[in-house]
Image (cartoon, rainbow, N blue to C red; front, side, top):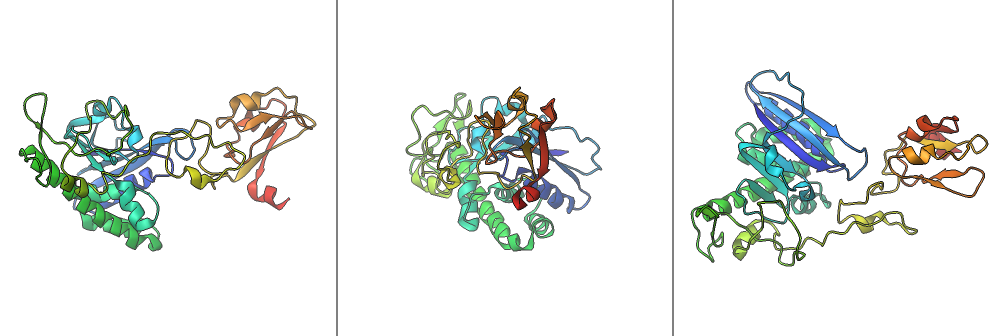
Length: 347
């Protein structure tokens, strides 16, 4: 069985990619596939996982993947210490990153730039379908493209197939660099200079961003090192900078979500955009029966309940409420009712 573990954040399309990969693999002669997600906090930007299993027999095991043949990070901030514990012997990590890593098990692709060049915004998931069609024998590019045609809206077919083609070229370029370094390429060659590994062998290395923040950390055992400019070009904008990590507070008077579009790192309890476009129920507080016990405040997973001086002791920040209904269930006095969003807007 071939197992693929996807790490992503809400909104990056990790489950869509896992499902498309499974669909593509199942088109192969005599292959079966299974894909399923595992969500944490239900908010955009929250870490989540998805899984794809591929085998020549019907797959009955629906448990989470602990160690995978391919571990894919749609956001490199999720690639941290202990990453190799999820990797099978001989396995490979694919990371959406402008960093590059000295550990030969990690292949870095600037998936955000590849997808943004075609879609106008960074949606990295289908980039890695193209990469896997190069690196894995279980799925071919024809099957990946057919899965896109069958399981994505028609208006997205051409652009996502173009992303797959661009990703395949990028993957071949990165693989060529790694092979050149493994063979001991000299400085100034297309793949830069090979650097000696701790065991006396050769460790492939590619350029980190030129102005990376001092002291910034990457995965343990995968520190970036410098190579020649031709290899940097092959890595698709690897020399461009990643802004220094900044976690903005979204609860501001003048909120413009586009101001925060450069990152997926946010303080806990906040959504990327007002209402995030997914709430279909909203809580309404009955001021006459509310006692101000603050149980709704304590139980709200997104911190949207706050105290006020008014008819009711508390109010709800509807810009960030996701309509989960936990506050209504926590209220012992029945003071909170969930109503349809469409009904609330009609009032």
